[in-house]
Image (tube, rainbow, N blue to C red; front, side, top):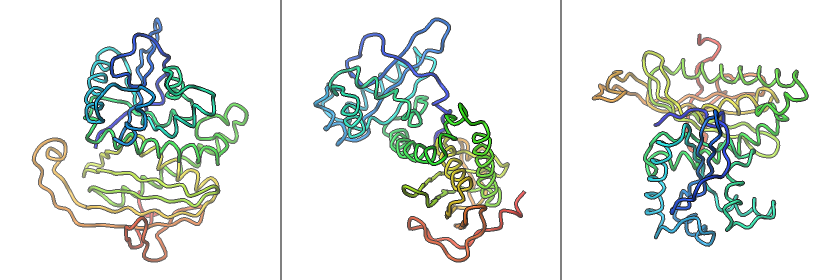
Length: 313
């Protein structure tokens, strides 16, 4: 599982320079004294590639060749730009964006505007040289789903997550920030209580307009070091924040393999692994999280009531 920075903290970019042969949708900016950034949208499946053919996004023969050419483009961008970011280029989202703004989807300007559309910035991931067909493309798909959930949660909190509320209501911003800190502490206590191991958290909060859901894979070593994708951590904390701030009911399951992994092995070498299956469940009536009242099944994962988070330091 690879690690990325919080991509949306970097500045956006505007079109400039010749468009490469791949014609993968992207934008870039060169401003004197400013950070040089590159943004690209990636078609993540063969079906999406086929649908986007009519818009002239690529001359590649098929999706496999498209990914290979896009990887070359990204490798070049890593050498030339301070920041390289990517997001899933979703054909349906793009088509709806063009209809909404009266744009021709075959025009490069339409693709550029779609990529830097402010409500979609939560879908951007920092690219650091990962293999596209490995973990990075699935992460792009999850980032889109996560971004939609973040937008939903932010809407419920009247812009408190994105900071939009702070422009007019500092008290509201402090209220959301306090709830976010409480949510982060709930997640921290779940992990501390679980100890070393390889886990997945599944979280659901029942909210107006539809359920808020999150999932995150976590690797935790004996020394307390935790490895988790930044975008997954952000989503988990945002969903917990919305649930606690608005006092919404929810359920969480942490499951996986509990045990120790030799530090050297887990971080690159051979490892001596001793794992046991583990699964815990918690529920919330809105104000706090506590062990579930009984056995829980969430997204097909069965779990027994978890440990008391109040007893975890």
